Amino acid sequence: MAKRIYVGHKPHWYENLPVSPAVLALVLAVVVIGGGAWALLGIFASPPEDAGDDAPAELGSASDAVVESVVEAPEPELEFDASSVDAASGVYEINLFSAVDGTSEVLGDSQTEAIDAAIADFADLGYQAGFVVLDLHTGKGIGYNADEEFFSASTIKAPFVTFLYQEFVDTGETELDEHLDKDYVLGGTGIMASESKQEYELEEVIADTIVYSDNTGYGMLRDHYEGPSWDEWTAAAGVPQALSVEGWYPFYGARDLAKYWIAINAYLETGCEDALSLKELFGTTEISFLRTALGSHSEVYAKAGFEIDSENGDLGAMNDAGIVSGPSGDYLIAVMSNADYDSEWMTENTELMTNLIVALDAAHAEYLAE
Image (cartoon, rainbow, N blue to C red; front, side, top):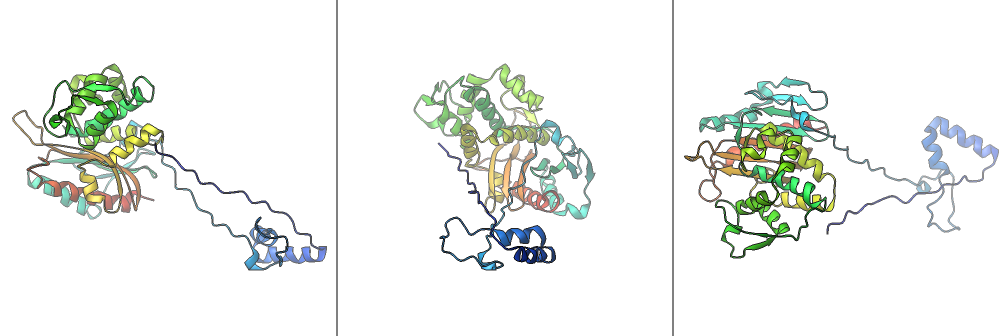
């Protein structure tokens, strides 16, 4: 069980030193001329509590002043909801927007050169991409083609598992040690299809679904926990494209995926035991284009999704979304595309995503961070 450690400061008590009126007058003159109230505190501060009674106290001695460094707390994250990314550009132009007041402006070519080049690389191969980036402290964001719908692939597993924790585990309706039967296997990503055992604890199924993007595990979770409460949760997140009627793997845009991660991050920020466990899973996903691009200098909590186009129609996808905590601060990012990808035999499109993500990270540092 993860423990949260709180570090506080022991209070200091101060008492006035006995001084004669003449000395007091001299002290007040020094205060007025040389620094005001702060100088007064420095002069009259008593020695630290653990100093012996015999320790001499010389008035005005710099070496005797009690100096405490003040560590400023990090700026708290703003509170966001589904409307926070409404101003992100839904068309083929890159805009700077504010989740605080809803304003936006189109960025100039000189401001988006690296991003434009990365988008052009997608286009050169016949692909499209869309993205939303939102700084969690300033509320500033950038968006592009956020409304074009792409195949969600396994990005949908992140909101579904978050819903499961909130609506079933945290409420006590189910326990993490509940046993689920593997009644069938689903191909594609994951490890459960090749395992011989037929019974799993819920906690293990969740972990496999997120870390290894296990399709069999995800199917088991949908079978057991999908229903009206999922539709209510996903509608509240602002993503009606993912209601149950649309199937387990819907189509949606980068704006929708960003809305999902606003809801996911709100849960992670509660800091409860289950939220911390889920955050750890997002931090250890087996494949993440975000972590490949930024993991050398940032913490990444994300869930990717990918697929190759097939005769089933428009299923090509290379997506990733999550929370990045890096040198320029914390931000939410959702990047979607219809680029083909397979983790075993078609990985050459990886650079399309990583180059775009690196360009967006740089833009975050320059235009969105404090």
